[in-house]
Image (cartoon, rainbow over all chains, first blue to last red; front, top):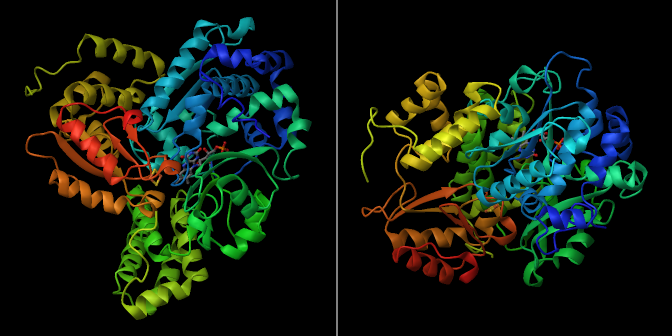
Length: 423
Length: 173
Ligand SMILES: Cc1cc2nc3c(=O)[nH]c(=O)nc-3n(C[C@H](O)[C@H](O)[C@H](O)COP(=O)(O)O)c2cc1C
Ligand code: FES
């Protein structure tokens, strides 16, 4: 079932003409005639959950915006796509930007928003240009601007280019960044829905979440909710990379067997090698052993049951010859580099985790380092303003707990026995 | 390249127009800082103290604020980068797919370390985090262009083209 990626293969799919020829913008028209409250109800009923990482129900989040306040309300579309392993939002912006814009119209109308910002990571210059052109087309056609489709509803869309900082994908870091500041997250509460951008109520949603809205409005919440499982409705774009035959972005209905999905769609492990482990939801998600990957289903519940998470849908496959200690050294270096530095447990913890994992990788570690790692992780969980700290501690704990022998082997051998490269 | 001093720094006509449009897009002036820094970097090549002071003055904010923001974000450059700025991804999937080997190759071929710039100003090298292109790892970004599924062969071709003065079309390699 293709919802988000339905147009990806079409020629010139990024143009208004092609989007409209496929029925595009009918959902926005329909929404504008439904009344905002009815649209919110429909999205709640659909069960749509956020695709940015946390999986929070979109309609419920919109419901947190206070009613009748004497302030503007803002929408921030999160196109920061910084979670390592994730490369799906760029495909939406490249190949179907009008679906995103139509979704923005629907969400904005539902919540009573008149200005939407799309926060795009700074590297996506091509995707920014594509999306800007689509925004311009939508303005020219009267789909954006002071009187959207003649409904009297006003909506402006502004694209804001980031400048290289993973932390700006965190919703309050993102808000700070749009305000022209360093992307240092804010304490919650207050949540952005109450006090967000420019101190006003703000909805932050991922590109893919917003892009699911046209289908939900067109086909109805029930149709969407009939796909997938009761708690993971609909479809999701999965970014599959690493040691698989056919890496790429695959849209998949929830509820299928996790490993069968990878075998069927991505061709299984590269070169017929044995599977060692899988990262199911971006580098922040705890690792799955091969057995766990084979018994999991592709949905939020099953991965939570396995102590991991679906996250941003970024699946990275490790074959038998991948060194997990080296992989973890890369991961911890990343978080140490990206910690914004305002909370000591994160700033110090990420730094030390990287130091310790690196020394194990190079053969200079000791057995007591393993318990030290777990202790440092414990001090990093739930002690900081945002969850970047947890996002580093969670995978580290899981690698060390589930693959402890691999770490021990590095320590006893004084180094690594795996090939320097696997690709 | 001419040297800009505080007195001569100003957006050119095209960028001034874009700057004015940017100001209108945000409800608060200070929010235009990131886009204004992009415009300045595009025009002046890097964000020197003087350029930052100019941008701050245009937004009526303290220069230290512009300075702090420029330092926080990795894509804002306080120093000039090379004419071809090589950004090699060093994150998870790219490292599985051989980015370490590519790094050694580039260092050797161009004669610089990450963070460095060749004396002739042609190349600079930076190791960057996940570029959002892991399905086609390993990935190299040169200026604003992505080169995917990089091999040593393709890397050679990219560098050769750059030495001749043009960034190749990724499709043509
Ligand atoms: C460190 C960190 C980085 C994040 N990066 C992203 C990102 O790049 N894109 C994204 O959509 N959400 C990201 N998130 C999640 C956002 O904070 C937020 O939950 C999300 O944008 C909400 O949208 P959704 O409900 O539609 O998923 C990140 C969170 C954290 C803690
Ligand atoms: S890890 Fe290199 S592009 Fe994602």
